Amino acid sequence: MSSAPLGFFDSGVGGLTVVRAVQELLPSEDIIYLGDTARLPYGSKSPETIRQFADEDVRFLLSKEVKAIVVACNTATAHALPTLHSKYRIPIIGVIEPGVEAALSEPSAERVGIIATQGTIRSHAYQHALAQRRTGLVIYGQATPLLVPLIEENWIEHPATKLVLKTYLDPLVEKGIDTLMLACTHYPLLIPVLKELLPGDIRLVDSATTCAEHLKRELTRRELLNPNIGPGILSIHLTDFSEQFGELASHFLKKSTGRIQRAVLG
Amino acid sequence: MSSAPLGFFDSGVGGLTVVRAVQELLPSEDIIYLGDTARLPYGSKSPETIRQFADEDVRFLLSKEVKAIVVACNTATAHALPTLHSKYRIPIIGVIEPGVEAALSEPSAERVGIIATQGTIRSHAYQHALAQRRTGLVIYGQATPLLVPLIEENWIEHPATKLVLKTYLDPLVEKGIDTLMLACTHYPLLIPVLKELLPGDIRLVDSATTCAEHLKRELTRRELLNPNIGPGILSIHLTDFSEQFGELASHFLKKSTGRIQRAVLG
Image (cartoon, rainbow over the protein chains, first blue to last red):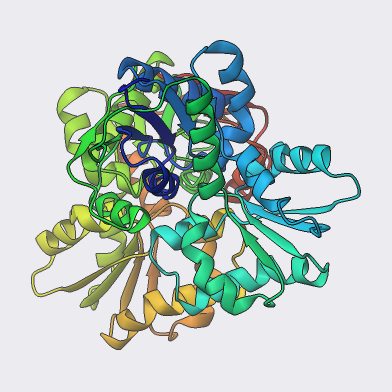
């Protein structure tokens, strides 16, 4: 058992969708969340730069003596997770394996679409993880770089967002996908609009819930669960704090964030 | 006279629209361009963070022994120029004064709209500079944060871009503006679409040309013009190089960029 906190990082506040799922499953855990808002987004940047940023994020969390780390960012998971695993001994969990597991939990899934940032799609991390697990899967990756800016503007219901979504999704629908993976921690906020735009028989899959289940299994196996009974504390640290992030963070977390602190990375 | 290079910086490659104008007016000058692509955009970040980034950008350019610096980024000009002026002795020229000068070159301008990033609009730097120069001006600032992502996606002609532009511009048109300031170095690429969407009697103003004229006056006054006759050399340095930046850079520059180098700050 360990009462040390869990560490989470993301380029911004989107990763709080994963925190929310973990809080539901593991309510006693304390959580340190780092959002690298000074350098967001990660999704359009190069693999080397993303690996460097992820490494600095991990070092910040280690300085807070966390017992395990969740990479609550698809782009960072796609480009940095193997390097982080080889460099650090602490358990580090990404969002891709859980997402793939969720997608394939439906045995009839045959044609899988993935929407994500440029960085995630170009990494082929999802495509590779899916193909390794089920032969014969047909996989379509679609980079959807305008979705994060639209979500951050809170234009979720705006006609422009629907037009952008249709432009991105129509080719996937035409290809007959049965499953759509929301491979970016921002995208769960789009689920109501996606349900409206997509044929009802396409399954939407996001990784937040399965990621929380992965984390719980890993903590149980390593005997690292928090023995406390009361609700855990969430501390949010951002490398840049501008007005809109506080509001956006509550949006992703679906409750108040409490005081947000400014983080300085080494 | 000085054959040292001129330094330019921006959060990304949008500032190359200013470089292009300077190359036309001062073709013999060598230019070092720094795009802080690893941390772009600046427009959504806080004043303190923008000032810190701008300071690191200036120090990089000083290490290249530039004779003058152009802050080819509206957000950095809006938040960091006064601090940079007080800290460094080298001539440092921003894009706001030249933009304001261009807007007011028309004596009948009375109702001025400004479109820019959140950071630029919130700084009130344009509003303040305009109001100082002409009493009785009516000024409307409109943050247009989705335009940079749409331009970077090269969706300039896409119906979604027109819908986004209409959402941003209709309120300005209803207020009867006679002048629209494009207060972001990315926006000149939107001029054809803007001309299509806006009533023909609204003047569009961008700062690239007047910024080049400012720079020429300043170099002449300080006897810093380059005495060489042949065409100057442009070296582009980016803190992150991902595939799309090279293509986008040629777009802004309207010609090939030559070899792009990776810059390490700090």
